[in-house]
Length: 83
Image (tube, rainbow, N blue to C red):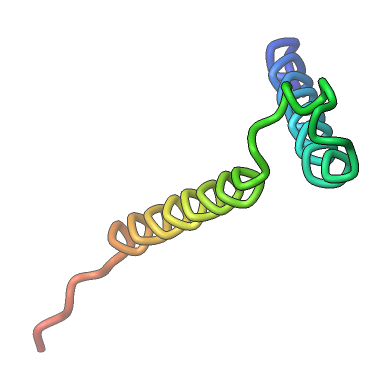
């Protein structure tokens, strides 16, 4: 059973993901159709970052997965038997 702390952490992660998804969706889907002088552009980074930031995040995730896999394989390595 999940404790109150586990539920609070889970709900905060869900809320953070929802905010991030909404922000990115507005930034990438809606903002290109809004005039450049509109005040809404003040709340978002330049459009170039909409490709750069997810790319960097994807590279970091792949590096972490690769490092985790390497550590697991290294720890589970069995020494060779000498006959």
